[in-house]
Length: 579
Image (cartoon, rainbow, N blue to C red; front, side, top):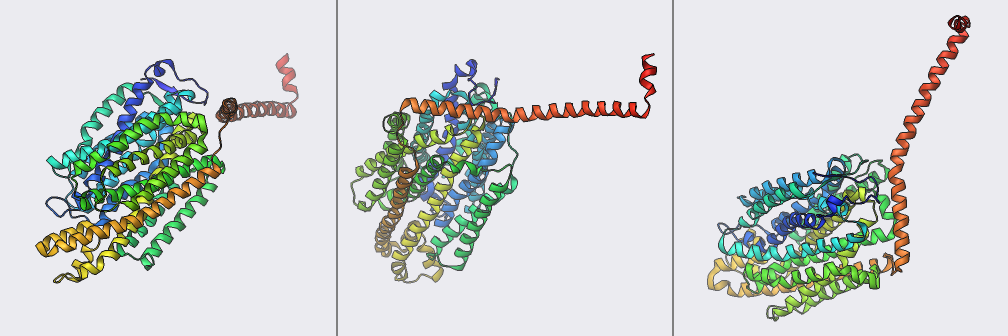
């Protein structure tokens, strides 16, 4: 298999690779499909997993959040390291390793007997996924020329939308015919096909001058994020964000993350090169990705419970409701680059953020009787807004770095998306949980015969309340109705926070992303960047050459000095040698 050397940002793609670049993209999208598909399937399966055994695992609201975030935290914590490993040892090799681990972990997750086991195996899936996601985008940047990269990234982003829609539909079909563990086992045949196709088609590529690993930076990232997210989830579980345990864990997480930033600034081989964030456009693009996923992931978390627990739709029907979202992503993602060419990245991303904020706010009009077709319209518009953020922002991040650093650039892009999503699920999920508990506690307390522990458990989530109401028989019918009303109220509180985050994102991109530029100006900037990247790529080689030359000169000088010293000690020797 061809191995690509990417020592320069200007290095042309080999013709043998260029001819099969779209087939390679298809294989990369299959790998991406597995990771995104699994998370979107899990969203539909959450209600089933929350159902008591034998149907589900009886997972609580906080355990469901951890089933999502255990994956995300491990995934995000290892992205920088996996990107560096791909740059160092080969992106194809790292990609194959990640897919294999992901497949094995999927089998283990599907066979879990307790929520704790599911959380642990989801973390292992995150470990494997961390080696997949950055490598797909890094390989893409190395098989497409700069002119085709925006189009390829648009198709890549559209594949994310396809996976988001296929996941719930697939999950719905599986849950109607099999047990909940099947939503994880479905990954296995896809992993096998992807491994074979990748071994045959995808070329190897690596950075000829890779950076060193940063174990301390990776450790600080994981510890800081785990403490922060744990504190946020605990606050929602207790419905009290001033609890000492919550304050200590959140504060500790923030302190560790601040320490991570200081460590990265002082390190000569940082996991995250914070110097990139000196560029306002780079920082704004990364922030746009993080804030968009913060808002959307939090809404995705509660939308499954709204459609299934409040509206009474099946998992399959819930999946079908997501089809407009997929259609919108597939249509707009590859075309977002045309909007950027016409109006500029600032106007495009700002408009996308405003659309997301408006659709989030529209959920305030939803209740238990709202026509369901309105939800499909909101999903379509949300995906359209997302497509006009993700594609331009991803292109901006990836093209701001040399091709040989594609793995690191992809890691930056993905970690802020995953961290944004994790914090969205944690913070907005906790806000939902706290608002729901405050609204339902009085109704649960009024139910006769429930112990204090049973009341607390029944008020943690709508599924727990409905389970308690079901055990009460006809007497629990009014409690079930009140649970639906309490959830809708909590949903309204949550979308206010989500819409506010999207508005903040609109302000950030409007202030810091560059405006529309003439084609000649863009071309000039790209040529200048390519020249600088080529110069930077050659600096390492030049430095090593100079070092070797200096070493040779020093060696010659040492030999000459030795000869000079010998002549001084015995001036007759040269004469005798001459005779």
